[in-house]
Image (cartoon, rainbow, N blue to C red; front, top):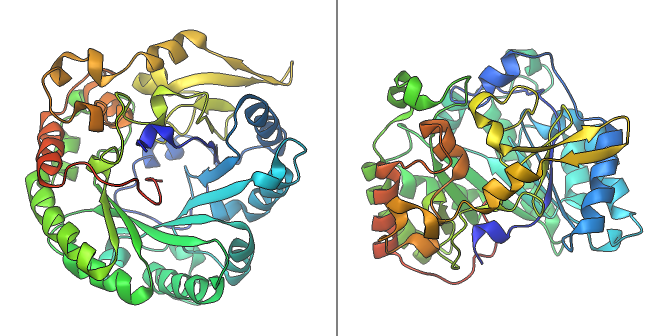
Length: 383
């Protein structure tokens, strides 16, 4: 099914993080504020509201920092959702984590998480270069690097999960160091026991103005989309032989037709609750108070007086109306029903408009669509 059909309640749990990633896309936002963590009052109310208005019972933990840095809060929210009188027995849990967490966390995850996506860039030298451990946490992990902790946690979870419903996969940021090593990366993950991987080409960080007004950012993250696609196609074919799923963010909708790209267009069925009490429609909009040019994605706010969420219906309608079937640059595109107009977050970040166009990414998607085409439904949708 199309990526927009991934219905879930996401919690942007905390701004705290134990890594110092070189390409972190929200570091500018986090550096402007003091560390914050979502309040249990708001999280609890979000579960009540979501369960009352949606059939899905899938909850998810995400950034803007590393969710396991607020382990007790994550446990408390999970426990509340699972014992909820309105379908708590059907709750499933997903997390996107940097994988650098303690034995206590992984033991809990083994029993409580269903889908675990590790942000993991591949071989040790690449992982440790782009995603180094924050030196403040060196003692916590006995001087190990992020790659060493990741490897240990992945192997332990896969070895111990046995018949339990737990998928441990990798979400890879493709960068200058691994773009030409995609087949090597598949082999590396295969040896670790990972069988599901989504790749995502490096994109520009979110600041206080769009990239079209700050073009130096393009030079920082550009490494050749054409090169990524060429190497991805070779790796995709190889992955089939190895029995590994090797996905691309450019192909998230190749398993179903929709003129929506993603859950941004249907924010009430896939809301994201921010640490500062807002409802965001997008993984790239992690704080609601000062979203700058990304404000189209802030669709609601916690009302502490009424103890409820106020929804911004005009913004929700605007997002609902953003479809590939109404965009001029999509009109004659052969892939428009298996693309949906590409990622809204990246589009607004780069062009400042919901209806903007990144021709290089469009060309990449069209080429992949011609080479790979439609496919069977994915076992696990992009995180």
